[in-house]
Length: 316
Image 1 (cartoon, one colour):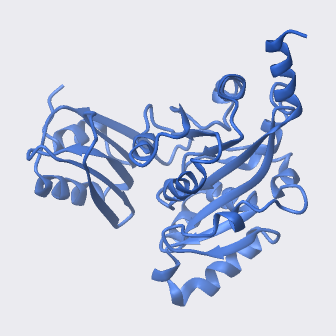
Image 2 (cartoon, rainbow, N blue to C red; image 1 turned 30 degrees about the horizontal axis):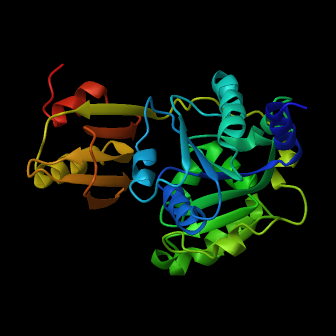
């Protein structure tokens, strides 16, 4: 047998471990992925697939700030669970496995994605003998749990398919944790629930194999929701530099219309700032080695791109 054919045959015998990371906007999925890469990146060949509803994503740039030991692939402009992205997703898996030969694949979905159909997706003839679903991990934002749950049915679906639910920011909602956990148990009775802060958890415990097959297999007949009509993802790119004070004023205005804002902004003092918001929360962090232009993604049901551009004083 030719060497290339032999290697291909081996790949299909030794299936690649596949982990799905889900959770609503701003819940902490990328933070969790950072922990995973920090702990496993040096000893495992890892591929990360990041999915974003917007035409571009900034989370991949954030991951590259901490490590370059993994292979990053981005699938943007739609959910991997939608029919519109099916062939793209299948092709991506085939190429990643065939060329990079990872031991583990982590798929971080968009916070707006509906993963209820993941079981059927992974049974596609082209990949069902290539990757093995080890576990579905859903990150829940304790602070905004009720808001997210009431906003979109797909948030409930994210919890329904989970094998493990991480209740993040649990230190900020101590009085409500019992009720949050009760609601999660009602939605997904067989999922394990872990209370965490900054998504800190033992990776050995998190990635421990489940005893039976994933919870997702019981939802084969439920169709995933497509692109949500409630929210639009607006993308702004510019070479214009602003002050940190201006950025914070703009973000304060945007939060009145946006559920989620994130991005990298180049400031007029020649520094760069990574920031993100979810509902009323916001966070800013200076980054030393960012080389790209200012790039901002805003999720809103009422904001227009022209309004966003005006806030940054950008002309068409």
